[in-house]
Image (cartoon, rainbow, N blue to C red; front, side):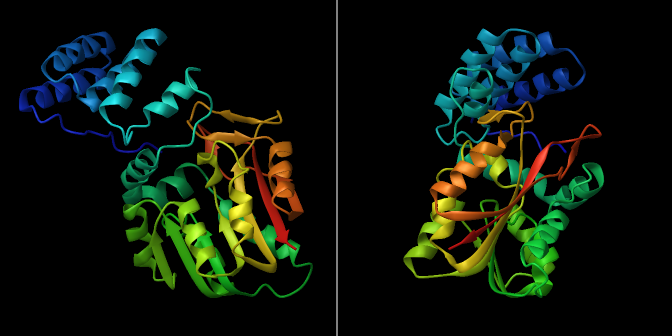
Length: 309
């Protein structure tokens, strides 16, 4: 599943036109020619973030990591909001430690995905995160009927997890960074409330107003978090006593966190256990399961359910 390429115009029509020519060359396989043309573009528009970022991508593919790093650093400087995710690329190249995904990058990324998201994910990547989360929550209830009062879907996207859990909710709230994703979710008519916000900010605001939820879902959301220590405490503050949090994430054989080539974070099982315990959440289940495939190969993952005391 590929997002639409990001293009932040330079304000110079000649530079913008040559940038498009460079991308066309790259699409046709002439990476070196495209890189040369981009250096000419940047002579015309030195603060052209999209050109710097694209040049970084090309240099990386051409086996020039030092040149790629320099270009990504320039892209980041030219666009402080980092809609392209230059900081993530620098982390992948080892220049930066694992970093929080820039808000502007995540929003732009998923706005680009939104129109074809459901089809690409369920048909192209064999996505089954909501189904696996529902099974895990059912198992956590140990035979009791699955019914919740207030449910929160963090990073709700287009509403795939919300649709799976809607029959079991008294009320369903969804929060997401991407207005494009929220438009798709709204069209399904399954949420009682949809909010455009960053997850941690939203959870803090909900705690401040005294909101409480019986179940909190996060389907493939934490793959965009470089660590989990901040999230469980924020979740616990808005969970009813005995309430559940259920989430899916990608994993690896080590204990810590790694940034995969797909630019998604994979969390070791020990890291997950530590983060939950530090927040005072009791682990109910932690099961190995793949929620999606990449190039036909299942991506290692975890399905996790925890309970608030």
